[in-house]
Amino acid sequence: MNGKISRQTITSKLPEVGTTIFTVMSQMAADSGAINLSQGYPSFDPPQGLLERVSHHLSNGVNQYAPMAGVPLLRTAIAEKTQRLQGRTVDADTEVTVCCGATEGLFSAIQAVVRAGDEAIVFDPAYDSYEPAITLAGGITRHVPLSIDGDDLDFSVDWQRLVDTVNKKTRLIIVNFPHNPTGAILEAADLDRLADIVRNTDCYLLSDEVYEHIVFDDVPHRSLLSNDELWERTMVVSSFGKTFHATGWKIGHCIAPKYLSEEFRKVHQFSTFSVNTPMQHGIADFLLSDPGFYEQLPAFYQEKRDYFCGMLDASRFKLQPAHSTFFQILDYSEISSDIDLELAKRWTRDAGVASIPLSVFCDEPFTGARLRFCFAKDDATLAAAATKLCAL
Image: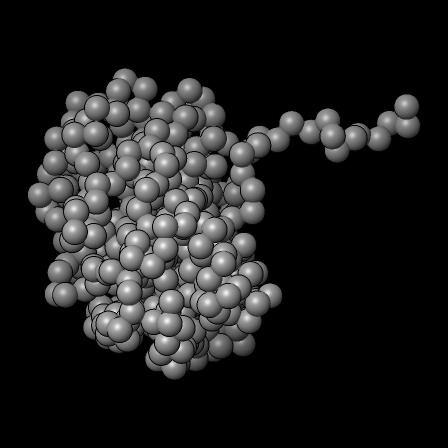
């Protein structure tokens, strides 16, 4: 033997995981020259004022490591925003942590509380980063499908099924509202129902709220932070990338009670330690100088939603305008009976529009004929895509 390790001897820790659907569909769009409405990124730049502040800090001596928990001024700005929007007073020093994007925040949160043999519950369609992180922590993922409200095409939580799934092994419930990919949102009564379910359990909550500022039709975002009982056991992860049209910056944050933040930071400090310093300073400056920017996002994206949906009036798709996020679900049942994954690939190649199939986010067979389209694009791109979709 020559001492070399054969790659064939490696036992994968994630044997069921392949290339993410977002990479697959974006690559297909690039290869075929299709309009890419699959991966969720805007086609427009961050606000000019934010770019100017980041540029300023790049040239003024803040290019070394940031504090592990995040730049103090940014954590203060996050705490002030949280108090203003959700009525929750949090300690910027001990309860706010800046992350390397929401993905790292979610990963660190899961690793902090899930132990070998623990169960973690996700709601299907579930974002694809949750289960691999649970598996790497030694946990077991339990899937609770969202309900589909008949002809309304809306998704909602099946609370009875959640009750039936929670047991003594349940360590974590991952909540994602505003929900990607369906756009479902929570009402205040939903938070009370969730509190009833987890009361008298040892279960923690992880709330993925990266689309917190993109909720439509004058409906407020109901964060788990706003509920006193839920707050005591919750880690909330958010994203500046979604808020500031800067998904490539990969900067997010986690808000949690002190005892959970302490455990979160134990993982965070070894998964990434610190986050891009000049961008943290730039975001802090912008938040403090223009605290109302994120309040403009609902109207901005609702206009995009309405424009895209209006362009599809002449199509054969069925739709319910999204309640949140910058994704629109289209029901293609009157056009094709094909499986969504195969149809999404074929329409990328043949129709020239890339989308995301919902079934890849579900554990149980998904019977709905639905695809997700991103409308965080300029009007010309949306119009060109709608023209192609109307021809199907």
